[in-house]
Image (cartoon, rainbow, N blue to C red; front, side, top):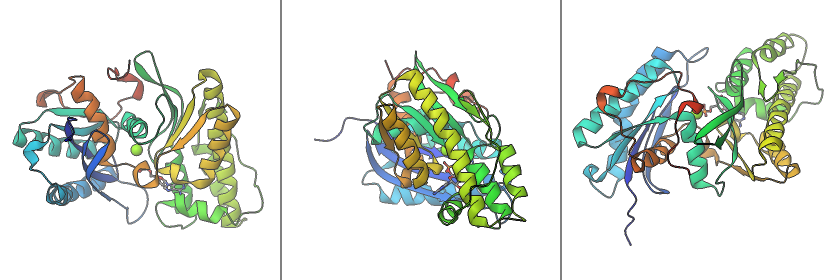
Length: 330
Ligand code: AMP
Ligand code: MG
């Protein structure tokens, strides 16, 4: 029987990744993405936006070639309205508005962080989880309470992915540093002293990066990688455990690009077990930024009638997870 679920086109473009996908209910009809790697240093917002501008037409063409149906069957155009880098968000919004006008289909403004959560709720059995969202630009402990996703704890400065990448650059590892640090850490033997910065359920990483960079002159890369992972992951575990013991949620969902780290997965799995919760992790291919998550979240917005007119579709670079009224969960 043909699905009665709406068909949604999702556009992700908050920072380094241009993602385009078409979904229907939990089914992924097509999914394409392209990620910007800066030639040196960190991500420059304008250069990332230029990259997205070039990639979206290529990805859209690929997507429409793959679909078994005509684009006019699409019921809604969802895009990442925020949070993220201003130039990237504006590029993505412009593409979404153009498609919405061309196909005469409703525009759906999705919060990027909530999209990560909704993807996890769609593709794993986690229904009402405590979410540890660890990515290049965000690190948050999120859970649903009284009509909104609440941020129980978060980084007070830089995200864990950004911290790993910044340390990786200083050690001349390729970008992004996260997976390279994971590999080097496996050879580490000596735990070097680093600051351990946690305040309640929130934490901070930038001082730890500075301290780790100072060790480079006198210690092996593998010991630094090992120590940095042990300290930062212990902080994430402590905050997760505290949040879990307060909320008594029955499951923990690990998502975001850093969720690919097997050592982090094992640590959070252990925390969940000790708190008698189930552990779920979003698979590697969908843990980082992608169009599928935007489309999944967009489906909820369409169903609850939260359509935005073009003239009210300005991007929201600092849009917080807890500012969104969640009408699709009772
Ligand atoms: P996202 O912003 O969600 O697309 O995630 C990108 C971030 O994930 C980057 O900072 C990467 O360094 C990080 N990342 C990817 N794979 C791993 C890994 N295996 N271990 C640690 N970090 C990773
Ligand atoms: Mg993300």
